Image 1 (cartoon, one colour):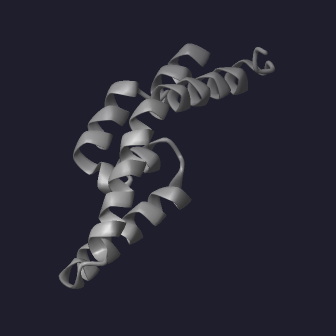
Image 2 (image 1 turned 90 degrees about the vertical axis):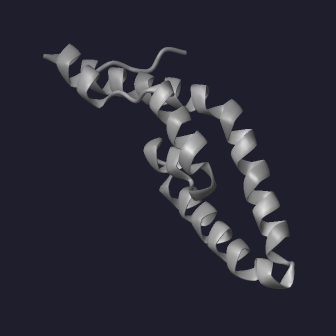
Length: 98
């Protein structure tokens, strides 16, 4: 039963990278990994960047979001590993390994 619950609720690195690739500028990968506040910040910065690109300032915001998304590409595997380890510990009633 625990294995079925784990398989049903675990996160996938592949899915996270697909979301990063197609929706990275909108924080899709961050929503997937439970980082809704920072994902919302990415959405806001992206939309403001697009809106203000008419006057040139928005390109700086878009550049910042792009850099943020590139850094996230290197963080995704660790996030997924951490989420899945917490899920396994929760399902087994044990503590996280040190």
